[in-house]
Image 1 (cartoon, one colour):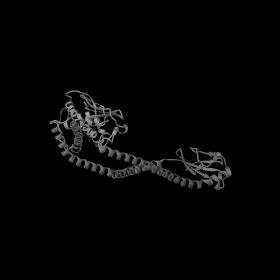
Image 2 (cartoon, rainbow, N blue to C red; image 1 turned 135 degrees about the vertical axis):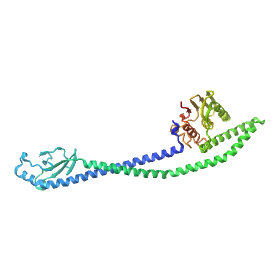
Image 3 (cartoon, rainbow, N blue to C red; image 1 turned 90 degrees about the vertical axis):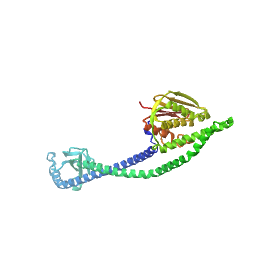
Image 4 (cartoon, helix red, strand yellow; image 1 turned 120 degrees about the vertical axis):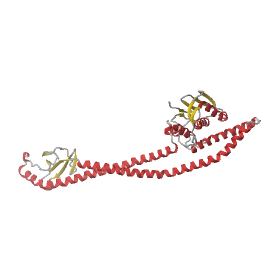
Length: 395
């Protein structure tokens, strides 16, 4: 999974917007297609009505000539031909008797039909007292009506589609408004919480450091270790929240950084937490691994990868850490991530397991920093097997 795919709230919001617009667009296309079909049928009906009128008028002048032929001659060679239309005479069995039609495929259920680019008018001659005969007029379809209908449908349909899509976009924005307000409220809450956390966290950690220099009974030492673990967990969360809110205002110093030394330092920072869960560490860290990056941002990457691997690991589990010139990989054998959530874990406020504490911002911060430095992120996870996350530096 590329870090560029992780864009937090904006990603979730715009994904919702795109899904709504896609569904809305499909619905609009279906409706416009239906309207276009109806308009096409209307244009066809109008064209046939126009031809029907012209052919019927022509038949009024032709029928007397045909009547004369039927009553006197009936010589097929002298069958009268109309000057305006191809003409044919069909018997009561609907089979051709005489004529010169280009297309003899007729549907006698309709008085006027369009088939295979030819228009046919079928005139029963019984009302004229000429017996069970059918007079057929035929004319080729120039298809101008079809071209005009399609052009009109495309132009009007495109304008309507653009207009309705604009309406859909406005509706989508209105639907997203409550989400935007909720997100703004949550961000304000986090800002206020972060501000209030700073002083007590600093006081607790300062006093814990002071107590380490005094002789303390072993029973009290265990309690102090638990307090330190909880305090450092809150401190990590505080640092994440501060970075998330103030990252645009923080001074950035990109310089060659010994990531291996920093990794050892952060492992010591989490040592009590690792020992509390009886986690076994397997380290493969290449010394003097230098990468050009801001120290604070690299710290946030390491802390969040380690914090998640410890938090979601099982008691007595294994924490495998690898670092070389190309990758930093952190792997645990804990609860794992459901396959349905792997594509979402880098989004802000997403937690794979809501029974474990946190705001769901750690991996989002990792993705933000990775995107800023054009780093690659890969994640492999299986439920009840564990998770492995690697951050790679491009050559």
